[in-house]
Length: 533
Figure 1 (cartoon, rainbow, N blue to C red):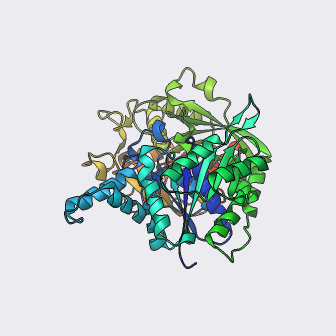
Figure 2 (figure 1 turned 180 degrees about the horizontal axis):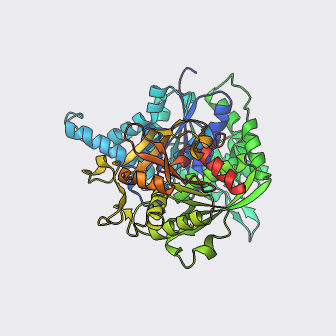
Figure 3 (figure 1 turned 45 degrees about the vertical axis):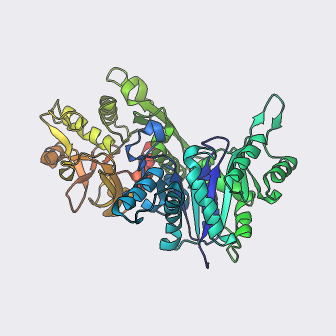
């Protein structure tokens, strides 16, 4: 393709309409036609990245291979496309302003007054075009966070307006996602919110090319015509996005609505293959027609907001489908688990996952859940802090070190079985300073992890400051907990197992970040398989 095509996805009326899923679905359809596609997220908040944000505020923090702490939507992009994202795929207002201010301090603007226009908008445009110019993608889809009309989104909308003016007419396209509410009292779908939303965009100089309307009822042809007339688009460019059973149905709905065809027509994209979505359809078939049913417990401290564990939840869905198994995922608040009630809460489960996290709150509940899984031979999967809890529990109840702990929680413990990594000891800043991104790990032959991966060398993504204290390694191995995954460079323990347990695996990394629809993560697949048994 001669030029990279830039598609912008904006949202109106309300937040959480699913811009990320629509972006990922369109990308999937274009990818299935043989185009190279990537998606980036522009977030209007002033934080540099989501790494320092509370999961209650923003959901999980997703980590890329190159160690960027990013928005959870990048997880959707990777799960749908199966293509890794990077630092360049997530940009925040904080990062934009930081770059511009650093340039101003160095004198790069030659004493000029630094303003939102042109300096901030120029930096936004540079970031948008980076994926097209540097990585040479055919199509770059840019999702703009927030809702049209928000003050913080204005510089991004202005940057889009300028790019539409600067680039060739067929090289840019704006998709606007809005809500068409259904009023039960009158039995009508209401288009007025969409009209107002488009009007707000027009006030900022941007005319949407395609409208995607979120709705719980089917759009009639009259509704489509009305929206097209009042929003200055043709009828074919009014796309219905009706509520579906799972997010993985959305690409097929968009295929049926011909979103990809409309986009290609408007952008002059020709000579593509017909989209082959058979593997995707096979996944959905297994997901919706399972042979088995199991109940898994997810023990964490942010369970009130499901997005806090988004990648883990989706990884369980992927692994369930490949095992032709329906997984009922039950969430348990670790603060509410103790030795008195643990049996009544967890005894019905076929498997237990102890989730990642930071800090002291709820950690004793996690340790109690690990003990219950270990003593009752229930398949157990500990992720990051979940693995560390398994190490602490084993030290206390098997090795007899009753005060064993992580120095993250108790600096004065006499048995520091989990301790601060050497390279972390002089660091005081919080943002972007952990061990982040992909690292290799040597896996012991014959271990459960080795059987799952089918490999003796793997690469997984990390996000942590504390590690297994190798001074205790021999004591653990002698008592029956073995280190089966070791980082070859730092000698860091990455995977622990209890060989004589049904399936007891703890990992220091985050396997959930690498699970995709068509390539479910092998550890989740093995875990679910053993839960079915």
